[in-house]
Length: 69
Image (cartoon, rainbow, N blue to C red; front, side, top):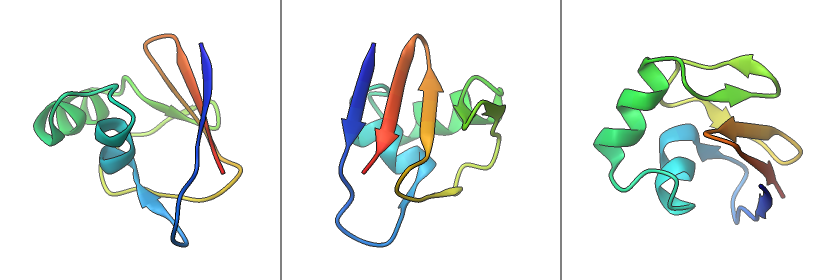
């Protein structure tokens, strides 16, 4: 499923995006799935929890694809 997420500032941290979109119920869950290598940013596995995501980047997790706007 493809979705988009509009950020208000310059960037959003990966774990905050996962929680804000509802893909993870808690920040703790977002940290775990990121550390376990289950999240991709622009097609590459991303394990940095505080990865700064910018407009135009794509995040994939559990069949969802989110475009940052």
